Image 1: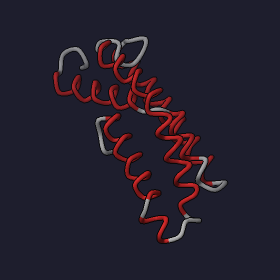
Image 2: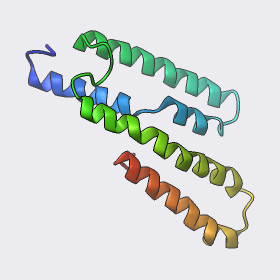
Image 3: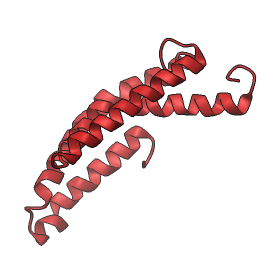
Image 4: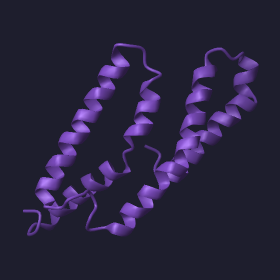
Length: 129
């Protein structure tokens, strides 16, 4: 089906792209903010499902790695994650402090910093999701 049905191939290739864009190290960073036992449990489920989906896609495509047929896209995404990680670290640090800020602080420089991390991450990911 992957080789002979354009709709199915497109769907599988889109799934490959989204898994390639996913960055487990980043999700772990945000998951640490969720109290136990929920945070670690949910992160474990995400990682297990990621691995299952990745393995299924590789089986369907016959490739040895995701996006093997789109090396330029794969390379672009691979360059993106290390560049975005500092923004994610900064955003998590801002989120960790947010609850302790006064209303004035939340409407001033702290708010601007949070908005800048949101905009920077969205721009770097080329997505708002």
